[in-house]
Image (tube, rainbow, N blue to C red; front, side, top):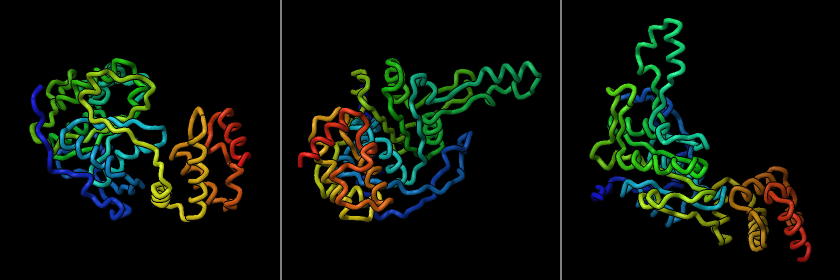
Length: 316
């Protein structure tokens, strides 16, 4: 393997994220085809996120080496939203691919609508003579095209373990080369080039439902997002999410940390905590009621877990 050029031009850790404005103008990623110059912009809302120092370091490392950042952690811990936070912080367009069981690696580059072209040809449409009219670039393809025009992007490949086993291996070549040619229209050729500062910043989320191939893991930077264990950190998270009742937050954190000590099949995570506290604050639930686990369906998603939690808190 050849040594990869190091990008020292971009540092997520140096952005004071909490001091960023509530909205920004960013290139509109939905414009098709990707404009070569003067791309239209759209207003983007700030992502409410609180990255810790280790997570910032992992992002910086992935950017510098031009490697995908593979994120694991409990569902709802913020893996997906990190990509949006980085795009916002750096003022870059956000390209997203939500992986399904039918997803193919090539779809991230482009798709060719042969069915519609055949239909147009049958009805005598002149448009059918131009194959480029039936080519649509995918999220990674648009990011590569944008880099060819001198602009950088953030790309999220979300829940890669939903795809079949061949998907990660098929994706290896595309992520290594960052270059592709449209088979149906060879004149359409896109490449990032030699400038490491234009490489797409790629995030890959993985819920550990399937093991990833060793070759794919070797080409990634890995980070596991832990559930915060300190009350202070959880208070900061809730404050970032605009929960204003500090006493409610304190009691809710006490309850959820106690629940996570139990032998549960599915422990409540950050997503459940935010839903629960947000609802309790909205309906002005008395704080002393929290030991009785009101609206427990927002926290625990299995009947066995619910029974264990109710019994454990009843013994207090």
